[in-house]
Length: 361
Image: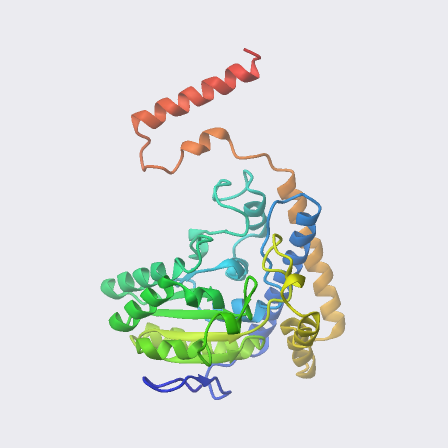
């Protein structure tokens, strides 16, 4: 893999990386990509039916988000933006509580406190993110500095979209990471739109990867629709960081096939012909074709997989929709390690009021 030396231009990643994605690993990642696409399609339908309030799909960007996350060890941490929630599923998080976060009910680990499509869990080392763009980047750098000070081998992976590169937090994070050479990998998903703002309205730079040069950080640009290219670039950057080699900035050029979220109408700002052109580069369809050509997959297996995953997702949805809302008293949980007297009084007053209401008093 070619990376940019300090003070030079960024280079597009070449197929010379020692990190290969073959056999069972390739099939595992393909399955994860199809599973995420299945989840996204069902969630988008549920939102349109009024069964959930909001969703942000990853459609078209599965190779970038999952290919990069697949390069991490279970002990590493992910600091996501909107379209990396599927990394939790890739790393073993159960589907039912994952979907419950979208509904915000009692099966949600975060107890319904975050807006939909903002999942997090310590069990898979993925933190929550805020809709204030870019804030996760300096957080990842701070965690990476802590890992360096402690002398452990943990690597942080911080994601952002192309719009995130225009924030002050992006500057602060890369500057700090470059100065202190902390074990963090920045992954910019260049899906060509920061909601409705295209690349020309976002930056005059020749790429997003080249932005790392100003901070003394190698910049790498990859085909974000090629899961093997993404994995190779990410794996090399992760292992470099783990060995004390400092941060890397990876730009994955991909395309957001759908809307920014269920609150967005992309027909107002982009040409459908562009969407159709990128549809021919669909990362799932092209990866399937390659796997079939290599003789390790077939159309029959693919059809069976898609039915299996759809059944799995539908069963999980049924379980989640049947669950009640979080108990009211959970509002007072997790504020302090031990509940202080004033919150205890407020909880008791709240529960007494609810009891009177239910009793008709």
